[in-house]
Length: 157
Image (cartoon, rainbow, N blue to C red):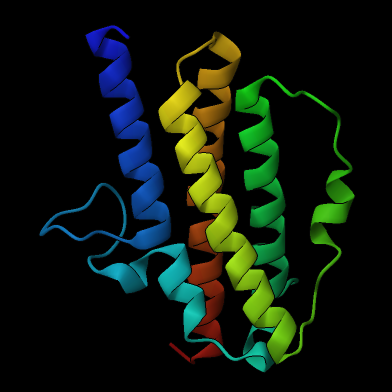
């Protein structure tokens, strides 16, 4: 891999990591500091009831399911598996009970981990793979912002 490709992959992974895990440094690319600023930290303190409550149109649970679906699709895209997806299915979950909420969070962690590994392995293997990796990071950053706004509204902030 050329040096530029190595840098590109490292930076894609760093920004993806920040979107999910928050920043563990005294600076960040785009989130507040600390793990609670990432998507995983933003949702872990919510109860299933809170995660299921629609805020400005959709619930946090719906966003978590959608992001998980998108992460899996992005992972497959980077692998070169361009099978069409039914994206309406990515919004089918709106409300969850406690068990389903825990499962949804586990699925999100798994999908994030698998995408991260795929970006590290094949993120610059083709134009399509690189484009898919960049798109995945942008999509996750968007939903992080949406979820953080919903959490703030749920908590009355």
